[in-house]
Length: 523
Image (cartoon, rainbow, N blue to C red; front, side):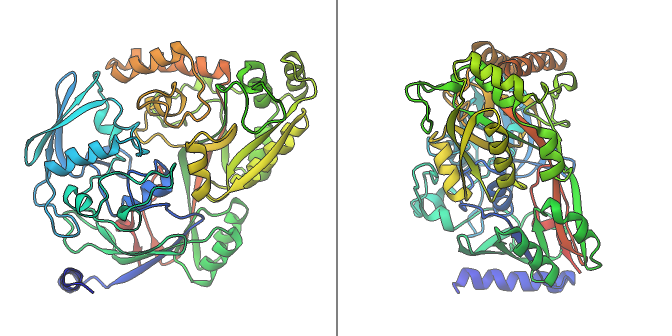
């Protein structure tokens, strides 16, 4: 143990003695691992949620998901394209180095790097400039009235530490690039990284020098990825772990009957959807050579109407999913209830659409699917494959761990894929900009099928700068209608959260599925 770690352990022990808090370990399991400790490497909930316990943004979210001060104590728009942020004083990174404006400028530059998966978050930021050690200004290319909400998932890193550890560039999951930030961490958050064994076990310990309030009593967190549902449930029932997520939908009621357990359930803001490659002249993995069926709107509509989302909701999700026609959930600003009506499930109409498009016998295509990220994702993909087979679209299903799935689809090495998205701003613009807009510059980073519409892009730009909420919502509705009528993606459903806990464990459950260990209490 280094001198610094010894000193931290002494400080933590002293703090616990003073407050009378008994040291507690929280043993937690997820169906998949966080793929890197680098907070800029992957814009994915598991990744962002876990690293949020170690790193922090300038602006955070409270229990109701409202913006709240974190490493910035105040912010204001000083002109249409300039935001000023006052930084928190007296904050230290885990290695003891002080947090300052230099780290903010560096972190935003790092997040904008081509290897970063957070570059869509900073796509409208032209410059971050230091005014003094505790004041920065962000200059945007256009007015961005919701900028503070947009940066709640962008975490600050130490410039000195990154430079010293050859981690000035983010870990690029597309290219398999690794550096010190993959397995080490140095944030300002309530927990420090003690040890990291990717895919096996990661241990966090409480940061005794944390600037903020820690509501819970947990001083150590042991995170274990357990991909098999039955094994994860058995670990909770046996007392091997204290917290697990997600609870398999088929096990929720049974776990509620166990006197030693409880299940936390709530609405989630994530939308699960299918994406199709609508740009290439020829699909990568298809029986149709020299053509791309998905470029034809009729084929995309045929796929949409061949999928029985009610059957998926009832048989696979056991009711823990809400079918949708929109790419955002109720609760996200800009949700338009009148547009949330799906075209009818109609296999016969799908067959006719395929025949009219020149595919009377259908075609074959590969569907890429993660099997350790979403609730019952593998079963959903299998069900989709069976439904599409009935109309002549034969699916070659490739379900795999997100460790290989994300590098593949982010490289656009896919023709047809399953994905889920929670807009971190809780505003429709986040989804329009990242998931649906034409990939160019910082936008469309997760529009992996490259669906494109000029009017949609124009509206997305206007929505990003409009301050009149009535006008803004009208433009969101128009954009959503364009996308829905062109079948740019196939939205399936919004998920429901389900976490399993031992009866002696409690923790805050937020609708974004971010687990904050500082709120955990183990009796």
